[in-house]
Amino acid sequence: MTPWEPAMRDALALADSARAEGDVPVGAVLLAPDGQIIGRGRNTRERDRDPTGHAEVVAIREAAASRGEWRLEGCTLVVTLEPCTMCAGAIVAARLERLVFGAFDDKAGAVGSLWDVVRDRRINHRPEVISGVFAEESATRLREFFEARR
Image (cartoon, rainbow, N blue to C red; front, side, top):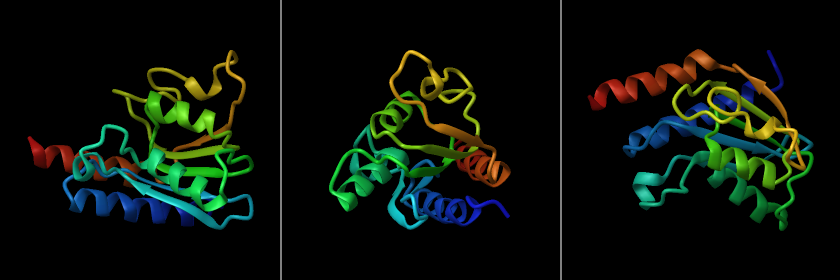
């Protein structure tokens, strides 16, 4: 078992709760340097009618509020889906040490699929990236969600 599996299981449960409310099933958990959860997020775009209601942004906001600062140095974001450009930018802006994600997003991914925002050498901060943690479980939830909508 990798150190990220318990957090990814939590993120998958958050993805399930997003789906239950009609949103794309993406969940995220933000860990402090000691491994404690300081932020949780799930997609809330439909519920809140907010285009920035992505799981990663929700988790980052909660973690920043929890720590009382916007710099989340030493922290790790665990998310079920490869972040988009907005979320990749938020990860860099928050100075996260590490990003762990499940499934790649061939249509909007900005951490290797379409772009690689977080590892662009022109930016001032580049987190470590670990991909493929529970990738199939993450991809299955997304596939089933979109198949049911067709």
